[in-house]
Amino acid sequence: MSVSFRGFVTINHVPFSCLLLKALKIHPISQRFASTKTLKETLQEVIPAKQEQFKRLKSEHSQKVIGDIKIENVIGGMRGLKSMLWEASVLDPNEGIRFHGLSIPDCQRQLPPAPGGKEIIAESMLWLLLTGNVPTEAETRKLSLELAENGDLPAYVEKLIDGLSPSMHPMTQLAIGVAALNHDSVFQKAYESGIKKTDYWTYTLEDCLSLIARLPALAARIYRNVYKQGATAPPINKDLDLVGNYTALMGYGANKDLTEYLRLYISIHGDHEGGNASAHTAHLVGSTLADPYLAYSAALFALAGPLHGLANQEVLRWQLAMQKELGDNTTHENIKDYLWKTLKSGQVVPGYGHGVLRKSDPRFIALQEFCDSRPELLKSPTIQLVKKTYEVAPGVLTEHGKTKNPWPNVDATSGCVLYHYGLTEFKYYTVIFGVSRALGALTQLVWARALGLPLERPKSVSMDTLQAIVGKNA
Ligand SMILES: CC(C)(COP(=O)(O)OP(=O)(O)OC[C@H]1O[C@@H](n2cnc3c(N)ncnc32)[C@H](O)[C@@H]1OP(=O)(O)O)[C@@H](O)C(=O)NCCC(=O)NCCS
Image 1 (tube, protein in one colour):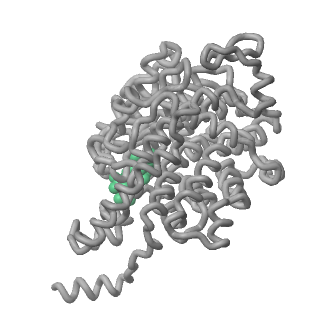
Image 2 (tube, helix red, strand yellow):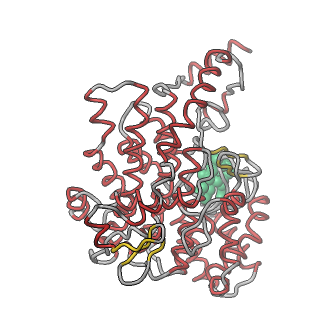
Image 3 (tube, protein in one colour):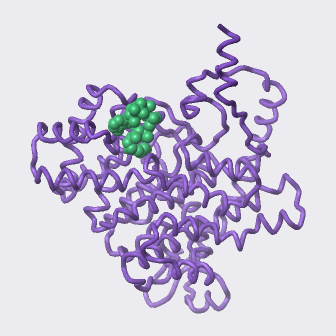
């Protein structure tokens, strides 16, 4: 099928008027992909084998020991404890993230981009996360269309968000909006009416896709209310991908480079295994059989903490303060001094360190490569400062000797690129992260229901209990 000028499309070489197709309720693009499988059909094929694997692990290997629990794990934020199941991605301390075995460069080579674009898009990443398969271009486009068709916010959420004070942090607004969408939860309604446990995942999937579809409109509405005096947004464009629509709804549709950057950022940031605070929160709340809206709203509150998602706004604040003090084209020596000043004042160097990673974050590398491919970004004094900081910070942090990982994480660069492209409101950056992380957290919710994972309920102990264990062993 091809789309021609003046409202005609050709299907199998026969011209049809767009108006005629509309009257017949046939969207030209859905027609184009009529023969491709949907995400749900693909999942229906993939799930039985995983269920079988899960059943065997449970019945044949339940008692196998896979690690020790030390007191350092209990009092050290459960670092390193292998204690939760997460299907979509695995994080290796040295290699970084892999999505169903694919590294970020593998994904960049294999996942379909947007038409006319180069970068991975959210839809192809979501497909990979959910099914473990690389989607075809047609499957990706069909998913884009499905999301765009369901992307409008219900009027009650628009009213709720418009009623919030613009001085309320955008992350609080996002979490409120996501929680309110549970008014429409099909999982919740089906559960109340009494459905089989084996059907939970299908209703959960429907809610998850509906939430992902509506996130751009919700997040963009918050942006316009807080920073653009409630400027009117264009309608959702059914020919665009999720992120293409997101940037258009924010008012940056004409900036193709920003859109490409956000496509990359939102895709590669979409999942980072299960133990991080927001993913873990979504999983915990979801394990109570709360619907996906409530589970993801809770996750967003975890993401709003400065040691987690808020770090990207902190990096930019810190980077701009350094730039102001040192000026453009500063030296490595000056940056070193500034780093020591930060550390001696008892603060962390934002954008460096990680709970699991022990090398430079491949997401940081991918975003740096994006900058390297665009001369105008390389000329930006803020991005030059990010690069120079990277050249000295690992040495300073190693000498400082506290952090287990002196290397940069993704946040060391993410906000600076947004800033360069004119998206300068850095309090908003964690909202973009929140749009992205829905891909992974909601994927796991579908799998948790498909596998019938139980209510999460670890055992806590008191210090006296630990003392008693230590005493007994001594
Ligand atoms: C990400 C982060 C929260 C991980 O925390 P963690 O797993 O406890 O990290 P570590 O085990 O390496 O911490 C050991 C010590 O090093 C310190 N440390 C870690 N990263 C540091 C940094 N970037 N600058 C200075 N000190 C740091 C910790 O504060 C801790 O100090 P303490 O013993 O006095 O409490 C931490 O590295 C950090 O605060 N980084 C800066 C914020 C950031 O970039 N967050 C985004 C994460 S994607």
